[in-house]
Length: 105
Image 1 (cartoon, rainbow, N blue to C red):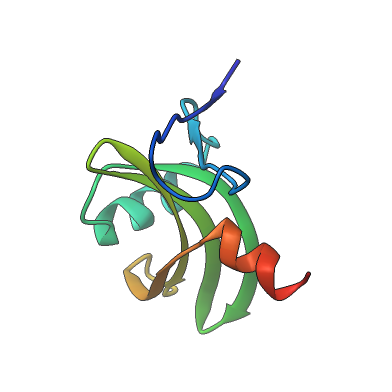
Image 2 (cartoon, one colour):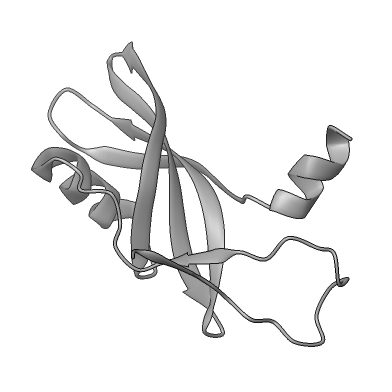
């Protein structure tokens, strides 16, 4: 199994969602993996590609997981890869599942 629930005793509310650690990430094609590796500053595990947009090159929005203080943290990463394969990190933001669910309830 490639996921496990992360225990965070004493943190959050009893009914809050906990981040699941991804132990095997999505297999990216070599060019996208190389582009993502070039802009990420921490070790990461790719979870999924959420979308693409063809511009002068390609924009990607991905969900990735990094570890902070030994705990998994999910990030939404926006990446631009130009026609020559050069990557630029456009945005990176924490994906907080508890916040996301709270705005729709």
